Image (cartoon, rainbow, N blue to C red; front, top):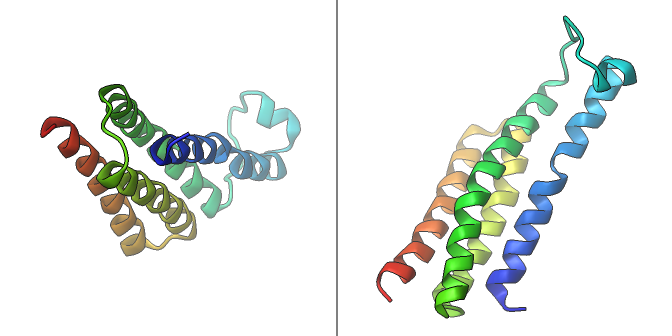
Length: 130
């Protein structure tokens, strides 16, 4: 497996497990029955859990773009170099983004988001200039 696909795999795993902490918090805050049901007026979750839920949604939205770019690059045979570096940048930017979002660090969160976006642009640039 090349670098780009490895980072796509790790980003997908990260995105796939982000729901676990905020659902566990929901079970503690609401109880099991309300967590699996549809409570009319649920108790509030911890602030960090609400932020993590938003970070997870953002990760899902951006994974779609990143995955398509990486897979198109693979299909086109555009691998290594800038695409691999961009994939690594994207992964680490998403790690920082979710941590900063969850911990409530607005400037760090925003810079991490921008770094991830730049990584996507780097891959797209490699595709359109090939």
